[in-house]
Image (cartoon, helix red, strand yellow):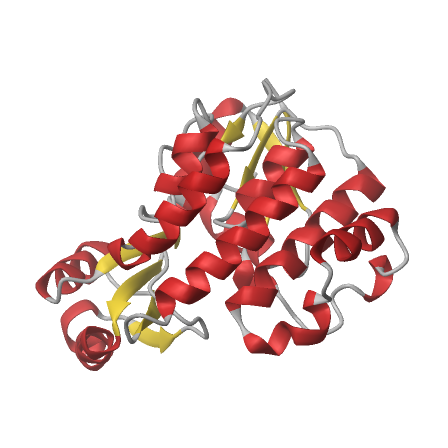
Length: 269
């Protein structure tokens, strides 16, 4: 079943000026009115504003282009834009969820000094073993040679010091405020779960794959909350799409990070 996949980026794809070409679109104008603040003006302040900003740009680009596809997925935050594009979730409640998610994750991150470190070009088994020895979580499996660890800052510092000798990896701390997709996000998951319980979802026009299950969402109200605590299995998702016969991967949102992960993960013709 040949076709295209829509892929939507997460928080790390943000950049200054990313909304410039979409500023006068109905999506951005409607979104700013609903939020009653401008996340693009405060993007340097972190998670609280970066997440709504990335979501708005992603949906604005999708609404402008409306490409055909047989399946969709989003990387972490990108799941919300993917569900909107698939018709499972309306724009306004999706933005409300993203706003609550961003606020809840920022608040949870402030409770414990924590963060995320990407391990590049290391042995996956060795990186996983190193993480386990320090009670860190492998929070993102992004592509071959790119695993992201999450947990307390003190443990991340030890992992970074040991990465080269024990796993052959180059460690780089990510510019995020907390240990996303780990148990430290439990307070955020509780807040998000309450917001999701008030949100209506529909059957999507095309399947949207969940980060944690590498399968189409079955119960998004439950799964979206749980996904704050579970790893993003992006490499496996791309390989699952390849097995479905996906030939084109259309990234909708700021940057081209996911397109780069596709090139490193999916067998090229």
